[in-house]
Image 1: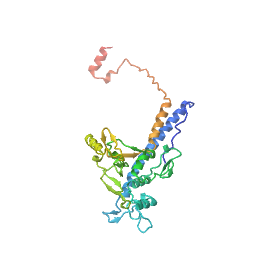
Image 2 (image 1 turned 30 degrees about the horizontal axis):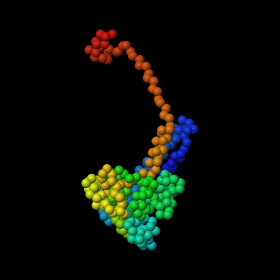
Image 3 (image 1 turned 60 degrees about the vertical axis):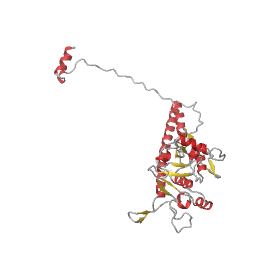
Image 4 (image 1 turned 90 degrees about the horizontal axis):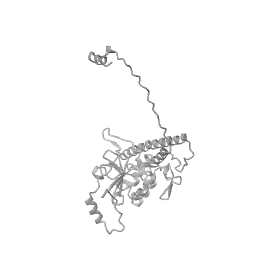
Length: 310
């Protein structure tokens, strides 16, 4: 669960210097605790993604590997035998299959949920309602089947869009098509030139590929290509408005999990500004100079110099 936030409306006017310094120290501790938690979760997202999409057969030993996120055959479960489908709740999987829906966003959310992503405290005690279900701070990551819906609620769930042109890092969530105005595909980056995703149909499970992970994927269009594209979609009233950054469209963007870090950074800055810093006065000690230098330890020519200047 994310580190609990302090009361942002706390009145500090009547606090003593010691109380203000204690408040600053606790704000810093909360920020560092959340930073470590977020770093661990990003690593864990990568680990779950690689494990869930990995092979269940070791070609070197010829033995089958226990796959923790693949449901065994012989069970009354539609997910049985589908690689990595264990990250998706059974009812959600069955609903997607019955609707003929794509599974990329659902699988990505499932991986992050298994990795420990939780609803941040910054949503407030009332929580956030998604698809008629209310999620409170500390609840597990919601499963969001739609890519556009995920993009809409991602900031409230503790995700941050990385700057245009950023290269993948472990645990990043790929937003393919985001620059065109609507994300059409979702993957999880491993940070090793590979990513993990469901190719569309839920029963296809998870796969690993270097698609959507190459550096060229994130370079963006040239300004000329951007203008040509914008011109080509003019007049499409219902068409999603492309997102232009610095005169360019970056079709593929990346998000990463930040949890409550933005809120805690703000709180720490406020606490640091309110807390007084005591100035430290350093009093130099007088230096005792001696008039005589032991001539026995000095070369002859230096000894003559000092003797001459006595």
